[in-house]
Length: 276
Image (cartoon, rainbow, N blue to C red; front, side, top):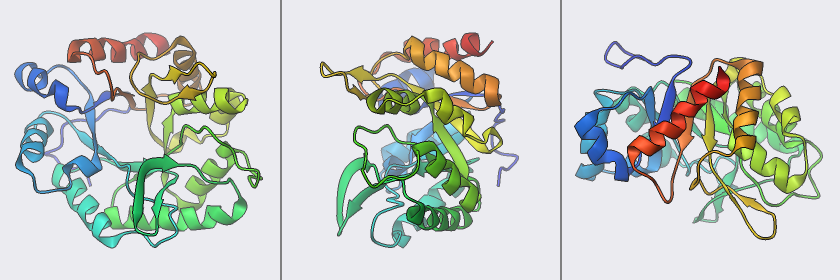
C-alpha cells in the first residue's frame, strides 16, 4: 500500500506519538524523526484543525495509525461505520500499518473509554483472530495488536497472556505491536518474568515496539500513565527485545505532563544508545 509519495520508513526507525503541544515546534523546526503515530480516533472527524496539521506533517514524515476504540473483543459485532472511517483515514495518509489493542472497550452501546482486559482462555482465541483478520482485510495493509498493561487477573484464565497473544496473532496472520513498557508493568503487577513474554514473541511479525514511562502507586501497583521518562528496567527489557528480534521501529509514547519536543526527542534518542 505504500506509495512513492510516502516518506521513507526504515526498519530501525525511531518515532513519536504526535501530540498537540508539539505542533508549533514541529511545524517551525521540522526535527529529525523517523515517523509519527497518531491516535486514529482524533483524526476521524471532519474538523479542520486536526486535518490541517496532519496533512502538513504527513508531507514530511510517515504516519502510522494507533486506535483505542476498535473494541475488538466487545460482545457486539465490529462497528462497520467505525471501520469505514478508519480505512479512509489510513488511505488518506498512506499509513504503512494500523494498530489497536487486544482488548474490549465497551458493551451494550456504552464505551468505557478504557482498554479492558479479558480472561486468557482458548475459546476467545478464535473470536479475536477472526475479527483481527477481518480488520486487516478491510484495511488492505498490515494490522497489529498491542498487548495491554493490566491490573487484574481472571481466575478463568488457563493460558499465559503471552501464549494467548501469540496464538491470536498466529491464527489471524496479523501482527504484533509489542509494548515493552506494558510487559514490564504487567510483570510487576502479576509477578511473572518479563523475559518469558519476550521469548514467546515471533519478532518477524512485530510491526513496531512501544516504550513509555509509568507511575508506581504507594500500594506498589504500577499504572501505565505515559507521563514519565522510560525507567532503566524498561530500557533493559527493550535491549533484550532488540537482541532477540531487532531491528524494528520503536515509538516513544508521552501523553501527560508532556515536556517540550526537544526533551522528548532526547528521551527517544536513548533508544539508539541502549540497543547499541
